[in-house]
Length: 162
Image (cartoon, rainbow, N blue to C red; front, side):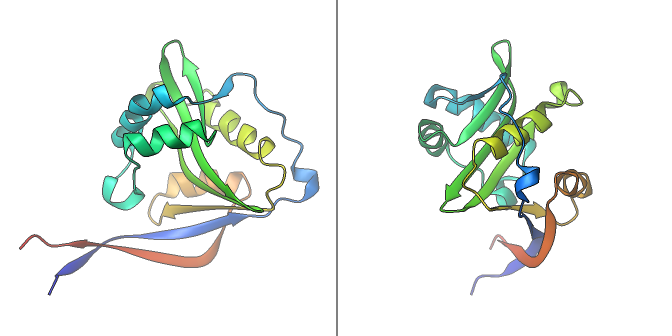
């Protein structure tokens, strides 16, 4: 028998925008990632997120998502300053990852990425994301943009080494 122990809890948050809240214009400095960006995207995600909890995609998955137009980026010269990775299914969108590199925070890069994302998804009526329950900074940011916890909680378990 596998011996699992709790690692963390994730809360689902959703945003159902009113039509009046959909006046976001695309930001000119936000662009779609290319498959060639996949190694840099993976490095940014690995450096900022918990691999066990946040299901960081592999380089080939990121390349495929970039080819599908599902990853938005802001560049600072040759480096990535921020990224937003999402998926759309019908009228719903899952925000998978939204990261700004530490050296580029407090420059509204995250805001531009999120607003561009909303503008790029006019057919979406329900935006969804998962956030680690004790990541209060992220929860506050998501609430600022209209997301609210919807009561669904997922427990992340890790297997103890034998």
